[in-house]
Length: 215
Length: 215
DNA sequence: GTCTATAGGCTGATAGAC
DNA sequence: GTCTATCAGCCTATAGAC
Image (cartoon, rainbow over all chains, first blue to last red; front, top):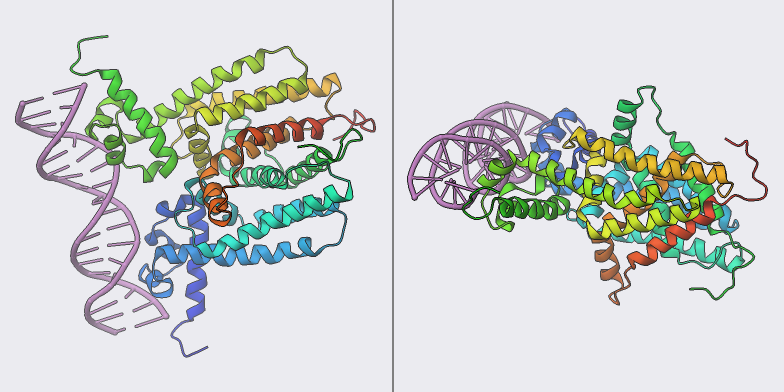
């Protein structure tokens, strides 16, 4: 945009990319500015220059990652399909998201476990939006009669929980399963996504015996 | 056991207890020996004296916690009930475990996310034992005809995942739900456990249309 | 067994040269 | 914009007094 020695954006992007990789793998404290700068092929002074410090770099990564994720989930929110199909779609997109941006779920789980000590309040709306999406979707299904009466919040944590856990614990799963069964018996992410879809669809389905009034 | 100035076991226990609390809340690096010692009402030299260092204290906490957890799950493994009831029982006991020893799931998820950098290989057998318990249980159900044909490993990660996520993210959930709905709309753990039980039971149930040969 | 004092290493931020 | 050099602060481990 203005005159520049190398390319302002290039350094910025390299730092965010290196940060995403290292923050997710090592956590906020474990990923030192030194390591991040080295991986971005620059120096740690650039982190202060471009972002104002380590914490702000961290937050910018989460903020921009969440914005992108929200955009990818938008279609599911706008869809006019029946609830059970939308739920399958949500799970599929969520799984793709986790594979396309593996750093996001990992960074978020780390934060959630600790009560969000490095979280910028600006991402809260995005988190609540995902929750609202599932809630609407479940309420639609109950209304349409395809789902049994169930608390959307519980469904939300069930789905998000199993998916987040699966995708964030890949490092250890790989290590243990590989050490004990050197054959290489690891789980295919696609297969897990399909499992959750089936589990969910059948597990929420309304049964003939269900009455509307059931707490 | 032998002559002692105060009580050897007392200091040891205090350090383990303080360590469990702080390691789970702050992570391995975040929980400094200084903080742990202060909370245990002693000094950091005691950590080296009793355990040989910070890492060994950490591992002793996980090792003893896991041993206790495994003992509590033993009854579920030995039970001769039908598979669907055993599965409900497993989920219930797992939930009680997470509430009774909240530091355990949190420490384990932290490790799993990072690939287990501070894990002693000695706990691997305990982890695999839990996995084996679920596997046997699911295979029993498929054999008995109450469960549809399903990969036990996928079931395992589904259950453990949703439970671990729920119980480990309580800190952030509390914070967000409390900030946005000051009414105090938080989720009752018992209710979530019941939800997983129902979800699981119905989601795995064999449907009339299921054939035995299905991958 | 317990404690204080300290050694030695690593951290994030930044001043100042280019 | 980029980089090197440096500073103050914090960490774990431990020597040595009691």
